[in-house]
Length: 584
Image (cartoon, rainbow, N blue to C red; front, side, top):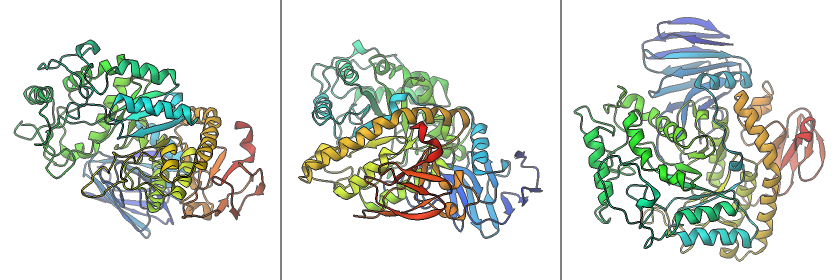
């Protein structure tokens, strides 16, 4: 059951809840023990007792209560749900027997009643159809910021073949000139003003670290992989120590002259405040059709030479309420909406046979796949927090999600953390390892590993003098390969019927008090229960199995549900729900 409530309505009863509204405050009085949703939250699955602020915010590691990807949506274990239909910042105080919501006076809310599965599906349907990634997105992803030349990627391809560790996706971040973010580093090009549509033949790559991008992409495709390139939504202000980029200067001038960027009230370009990522840079206004035409005309040649998608990083750049967008909205809506405008624009640009990989977002996130859990250090506590983020994201209607396996920042993860995180990644919608630049992302603040700190299996094996790690990772890659048909079928079903792929136990077993409180297990589709090992050097863990019959994925052990057991399956405790075993 679902009901939209106009901001004009001030008092009503719905699904056992008493709602009263006065100005910007909505009071919801009801009895409940647990509340879920609120987007990608790193600090817990059950938010009762917390005050949650729904605001897109960039936070480098240890996110705590911050999030890149909020959603003003929740549901309780008592069968009540609510969505605040606004892009503006909202605040939800989940108190005992009363939820206090601060929201714009004219914002409607949508109320839901029913089981979690029903509430989530109805909420997702409000936002439109889900976007299904291409099938190859369910293979293993290899990613690093340290690959800054063609020979690095060619070496990666060689290592993948040498160690029999193939990846279906390669994400390259340090490919561009780091100014325009659409010209390959070192490529010679005659700068031109205006929104000229670029062609591959416009560039001379002979002296570039990327001497043959088109040939490289063809080589990647022959290896059975796909190339994803990093993007950031700025007209960049270059630093004093950077070589001036004339094309970037022309792009900035053109954006300012033609009004392609987000503006201040006086009509001048808004710039990201200093002290923030890309401080001083102007921000493209994706509500302006002319901005989209200009922006993507310069990137279309990348699709023409075979680029398979983009990693749309950033998007948390609207930090003033008084900025103005071409569609008449301001920064109060834009702080949260910008990430959605940005990624939706890219999603429309690339079409259906390519992939988008995004960090920031806002409801409805399922219309723009895929998301990943942002930046974490290679520490064990970060594995716990990013798992919570993935599970809360799932209960907020996000279908396709992954994380940087074992973290990507700081010193290399321990072998124990790497093994456990890689096993968890194997049973997530997206399985991706990622690495920061050599020496660390922010060397002055937090040094990384000296030399090559790539989180690839072969580099981890070499760094720790552990050759047996290769065989362990090969087996995980094979497990993932065998799972792909199941993941593809599950993805199609989830997109068609508005369901998450990762499902905390409360999704399928509402009313089960143990399932309500379980925040470290999940179902992957209908058939697989996954219980990640989160403790350092643990060889087993306690696993709650809901009612029904379960079969150990690796052990073949048959167990009756409705109980908690000790399980030591390696490399990770996974159980098959007996009635769905034919799906695998």
